[in-house]
View 1 (cartoon, helix red, strand yellow):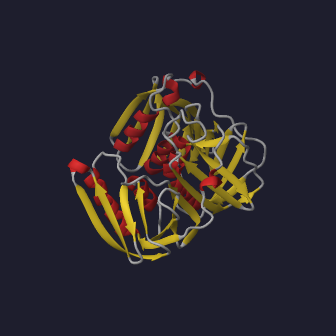
View 2 (cartoon, rainbow, N blue to C red):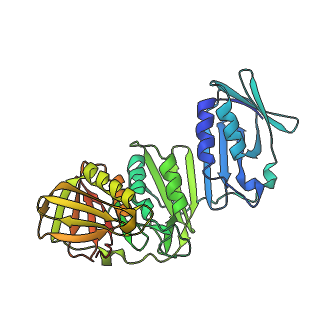
View 3 (cartoon, rainbow, N blue to C red):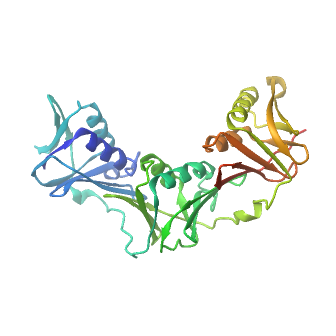
Length: 368
């Protein structure tokens, strides 16, 4: 191999490929990336058997074709340390030489035959497409509600539904729920009992650009494939039955309060400081024009704050998990939020008045 590519382009490829390489692999080769110098450019590929990535970068010169496997973390750190400008990748004496200016790294490499296999491609021809920025935003709005406990089957992945040119993403950990909808088109069918893993959500949120570029998504054979230009991400789906989330979605709410996102966020942050690491509920007393946020951690101290709101319906006292409210507020792009309530122990809805395509639900807590 003897190829020259711009450092910025190489960093972009390696950064994305490292998302698919295993962090602490049982087999060292699963933590490696494939570099393949072809007439079309430099192809980069990685897979840990659960996640796969492939992309092609434009090169300025290809003198000799060839392919090698190199440790992902090592080559990424090495390229980051090189000075800006073109980088030459050349195999010399069982080493891959990375040279830019007067600096050079020499890294060991292994043969392609040592890799156990790459993620298969979906070939059913059915897919749907949406804007990259829309998919990235939707994932950011719901992924934090995926249960981190892999033992909680059905809750440890993101549920996806496609109908009527609308892609709906839903996540819940049993005590809160997030839902987001985006416009999509295509003929793909999302199989039942398939959940998108948290690792896939996190990887796509990091690598997808916030643009109108079209992303193509396909489902099949227990896999999800996401394609953007010359890059392809493949994820192995989770086999699990997602609960009927519609049962906890209120048809209407009797008490609705509109409040500044920033004001409520700051009040919840101060309440969190007062409560420390305790799991006590944050008490919120809603009236027609104010909401008093009260955090009492007994011997650890207390905090109270009154903020302005616009409430319709009867006043209500309710206990909320302040951390859950903060995460929902962090996903709202608008300046105000609408809180919907029916009773002290019934689901609480959190909405962005300017964005009807998203919804968060938090189960309240008992307060004294």
